[in-house]
Length: 404
Image 1: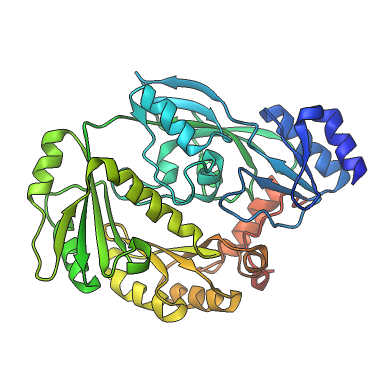
Image 2: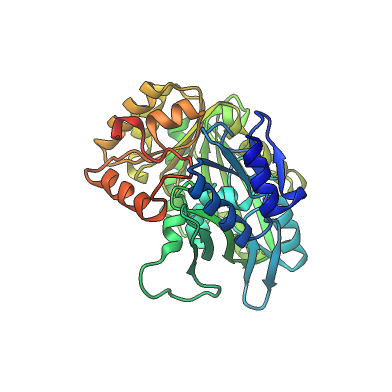
């Protein structure tokens, strides 16, 4: 262990090394080149590496000889309001980024669950989009390009810095939601948006079936909510199910959409005051940290009701949310590897993928973040891992033990 501290100190200096809560050496590089140097050293010494941001999303418990913290990669290289693009370090906290973008009249349309100081790199690597995916697309749609250090120490520039089509295979898509299995993201080129004139959150409370009917009516109307999320009573801290709609855009357009809100027996509407809407989103986003396990499923909107029943029957209702416009389901609670594997097999029969977004290492290693729900997917993931991390230096459980 003393050798590890000595080697890292030689690479990064006195301020680039610390000790984590378990006594492991934690490298804190402050540049892409420094990350590459540490990973190259880990390959030479055959050390396994655990990568973390602020340690607020995935538990910092993957087996490793060395920890690499990306909190030193907290920089904003450039923000260009005229082009609505920006280049930032992967260690920038989401709340800090939002503050700087707001000062420039811009924002990043990603409302991922978890703490507000969660790092951008964590959000991108795990692909954890929130309700705004309905109006603005999943996480990958906001990333123009990135810089990645592969598991064998190579530096890759993927995608681009401007809004245009990328010729050839876009390696950025591989990294978004790859959980670090194909390299360590150090820098990101982002697609940004101009700050909207109006941002209104409206809630409907009632029985789940009634709210799903309301959601279907909204989908079939001319309304264009940026988010339409169905939340279980536990998640919404409410005695009833809640349908949360968020309208973002010009004042006139938002007002017109609000005027079209459908009426359904047993359903009441409530406009959240502007000063409280942020708190509501923070509280519901933090709910994904209440249990030790968070999963997401990608169902078709038409099968949302049946998929919600499936999840509730296998794991209990828990802290459950569902994109009533896009079919994404997120569940948080307590679950065993056997329960998750069973649910994944049942979902696979319906062509529904299940991703383990966060869980303790014993669960992640047994079930895997991805898990193949189609024949051949597991082999593809293995080949990609061999290409980008041949010695499997980065400690990550993309595929569970059942696929080994």
